[in-house]
Amino acid sequence: KQVTAMPEPTAPPAAGWDDLKPLIDEELDRLPDKLRVPVVLCDLEGRPQREVAKHLKVPPATLATRLATARRTLAQRLTRRGVTLSGGALAGLLGTHASAFAVP
Image 1: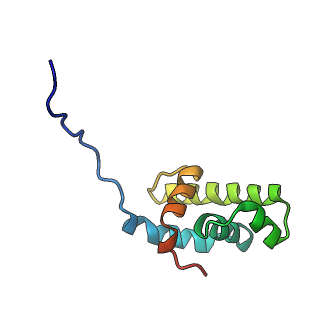
Image 2: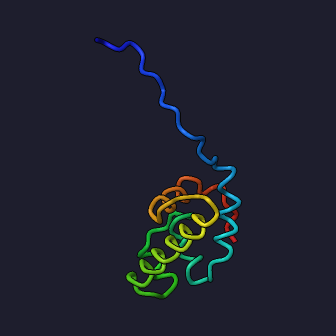
């Protein structure tokens, strides 16, 4: 049979951006500078990693490691607060909503 209309599946309500932003802000503030600054520059400001590595005077591999550590730490801390995101999903979320953050 041909279906004329597909019913929408029911899904539990997802936390809205307005609910997540304060939690992410708090957890970003808790990161040490060496982890927070790369996230701010790369994920929130959208700067290329090579440019940020040069600005911070660290090798690109060091910057990549710090970004991965920061994202993983943020994801773990947010999970403990009831928000489940992978490090990659968190990076995408930060990039998508970068203008909503007050960059220190």
